Amino acid sequence: MPLTAAAIAEPRSIADDRVPGYTGMWVGITAELFEFTVFFVVYFAARWSYPAVFRASAPKLWTLGGLLITLVMLSSGYLLLRTVQAARRDDQRAARVWISAAFVVALGYPLLKYLEIQWNFSHGVVAGGNAFFSVYYYLTINHLVHSAWGILGMAWVLLRVWQGAYRPGQLKGVESMAIYWHATDLVWLMLFSLFYAFV
Image (cartoon, rainbow, N blue to C red; front, side, top):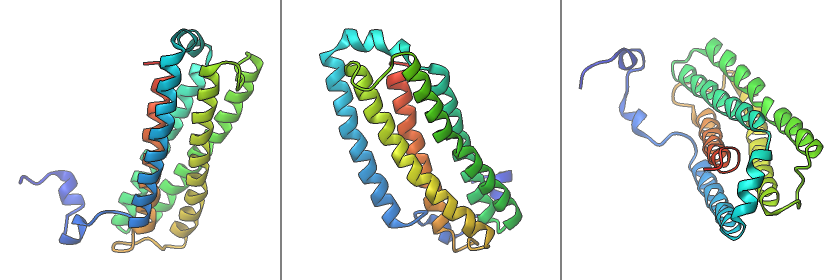
């Protein structure tokens, strides 16, 4: 296999073939994905039952808000990835910078969600208004709750990074955080497609 710049910068070892993060986090993420699978079944059942309502209601959402949330989610996920990479290199200074940036950016999600809900209320997009809005609030508020858990976890990882807890061979905590956040990213991308882009 040819050597690349990335391979030279971060040489692999036998230990690198392990599954990253804690097994419990993978179990939790699997449970979360099953949970959202049920939510998506609810979505498609409602969409099948009320197609005209879904077509008419989707354009009433604050699409810019949805795009900004997407940008925040993906950006904070990227910053977490850089945190993990820095910790693997034992570059503690870079790890502190990346995790601090990831946390600050992630805080933009609940702020944007609050602004979005205020915008929704001022434009008559209220829970119970119709089947589309009911399902929209049901799924997106559930996602916000899961993301809030992620932000709390990120705060803990931030503290631990500043304490120098994550070094090569001791990365499970920071890896688990990144894995969880990427799972919430994945769910959000599906929500964005189903509600804001209405595919």
